[in-house]
Image (tube, rainbow, N blue to C red):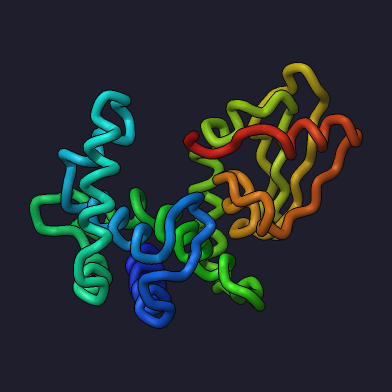
Length: 213
């Protein structure tokens, strides 16, 4: 079994090491140090992860993340590189692949594409296929706040109707699975996708909040 999530983990770790702690990312308000702290907390601090979903715990989670982010940056990145601890189900390869592939891919691009002069990576076909499969699982959730219908088309991989139209018509998004994933997860400004449809519908989609937010 090819472990694409593990490969993305290692590449993201290398990129965080290379850039250092204080460069921007595409995650609003986070630099590389903050993102590294988030990645470690996600796998090692379930008591803080719940703060992402329970509003009255969010302040504590944010304070703790800021404190962790101010620690030893190389050690923080190394902790992430080593992977989830044995007690975490994400330490198991199949769970890791299911839970982490898109997370690590998107955050890797959050780091890369926030820097000047970036270009899309030439990703292996197998990885593109895995991203397409993952996108089809999550697309209805990611596009739930769009007022338009959504059809995703990835050449060589197929098409997927992610949402029926609501107040607007349907917009067709074309791109590689990787670029469609980035768009669906709210990285619209850097995702290289083509949008087809009536101008008003495209504008409505561009204004919609996508992703988990």
